[in-house]
Length: 172
Image (cartoon, rainbow, N blue to C red; front, side, top):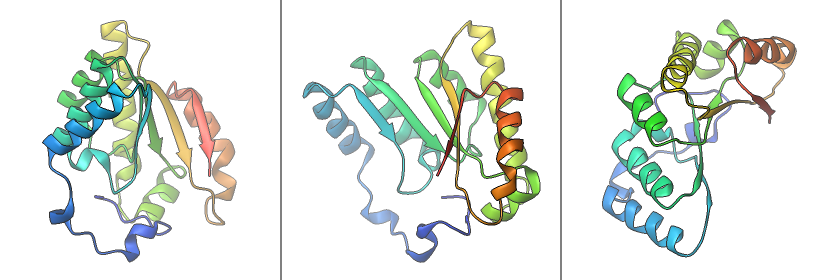
């Protein structure tokens, strides 16, 4: 992951990228699962999915090719215009943004100054592309890891979700 969230268990684990499966193997596994009749998928964990955009987009494409429903959980900082266009063109169903408070709280919790602004900018960009393509998807959600630092941020996150056309707020 490109962030270092202070509450994330991955901060305690040394990640060895050489142990990761190849893009082809991920595609093969996804196709096999689709052929077994699975229709709902969640891409999450193991770090930030968009840190490997080629792999993640390939998996997403296979899921949609088999008419599956897909959800992606992301920290929201690594989107590019190209990724957003591809995601909207394939009619990806849902993007869940890990957002843990307003600017100062989120940036503190992620150990990354400017991460909040990147997420907001990318949500606004997704919404612009959705409008341009007259697309209703992807649906946008926030997931909020509640802790003693950001406890009082919940009402502000509800308000922010409304302002950014985010449809759901999950509190963990």
